[in-house]
Image (cartoon, rainbow, N blue to C red; front, top):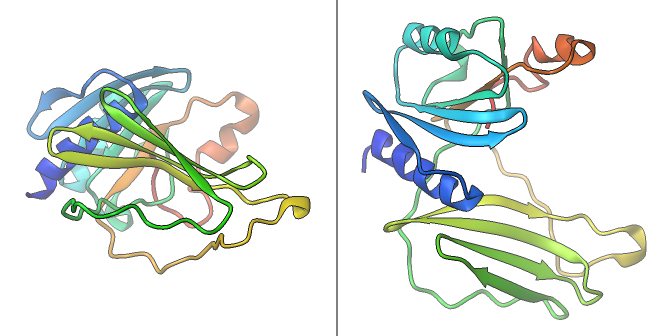
Length: 201
């Protein structure tokens, strides 16, 4: 599967996970997801276009609540002033395999909820507090993992067996941006890259 097909599959799975309409083709490998949320009205998925073409597209679609995910190198991407770059993310894939669920640490339990187009898993600690969660959007033969997060326990409820680790980032393959639609009091923050540079989801 090439990167453009992988981007399209990601878009279908992400839309399934977020319960939005399926991505609409815009031609030449581009897609649009109508998210319909305040501050996130739509999201455009763009293939590996040249920096100049990506910049022209961003200029043409800029507006409150507009977001872009592009297969681009953030180091060479120049966006119009209406856009704010967000932390770089990476488009990764691996073949699905039928394996037994991993064993949880003692005291933890997993609650799996299956919908028509998505799965949701919550891992609960012995005291019933949420320890971790994730969603999976289903798109044909593809499963797109989304909103994967672990929750840090309070000092009074330390969770044995939970670990937080960081890994070095792999080579850049994808980038994100969104239109700045914040009120004037936060506009200065929106017009410059956040700490660490890059672009957003």
